[in-house]
Image (tube, rainbow, N blue to C red; front, side, top):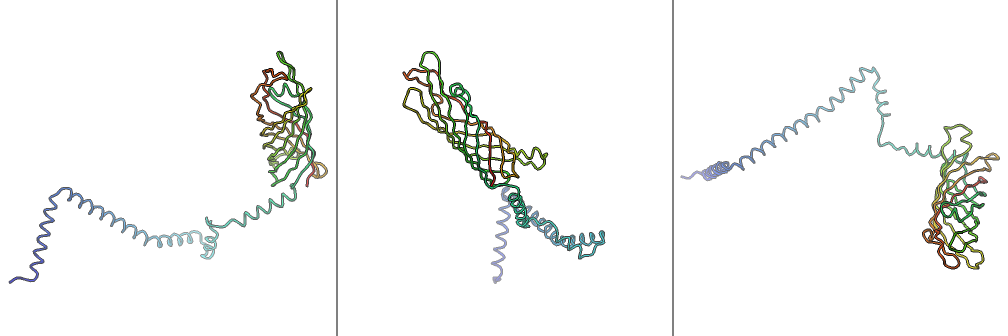
Length: 296
């Protein structure tokens, strides 16, 4: 007689025998041991994490009670203090708006929107241009727009005439006139003078920098022809402005160095007979200017 469960017992015995035979392989035995160890470690970590999670509210509540007992403060006051705690997600837009409003009021009360006026002084040259061009008077106009109390954008125009004199041996002397016109675009920065003496604060020191487009016209004596060219320049300088007539006007002084890049800087000049003079018109420009302006 065959028992109905005999077939299942035979299958279980066969599987156990197969498992024993498989355990004879060393790599399989090592893999199963590592898996059991990893399972135990993971189980222990999960149990520790669950225990800490369950105990945390009780510990926090115990700390709150202990702090209340030490301070002897009513619970209502403690809640009020916790409400005033630092919130990293707080919106500070209202504070920034109040600061901006104060700056705007200070600007409209003490600042300037526009200034315009007259500038005039002397223009000189460096290197070879200083030898063949004479220094002379320069003058022009300017318009300045203020973004705030510190920064302003200035547009200006300057014009000047200079004597051309190229002399030497082995060539015919070159004499004539050089007309220079500047269109300047500069950014001005006024230093913060709140923490200095009143006398220094009234000078309103500033730095200026920007770029310019310089147009040059050269006319040679005895020759009806003339030459025109232009150059791009970089400006850097500094100055002061002294208010007058209850800040309605101001007088200022500024000095600017102008780095120029004319196309003929590295070319040798030729005389009227096409003889080489051995002189290349290299150099830059500098100006010392007086300013008379009106505030708006």
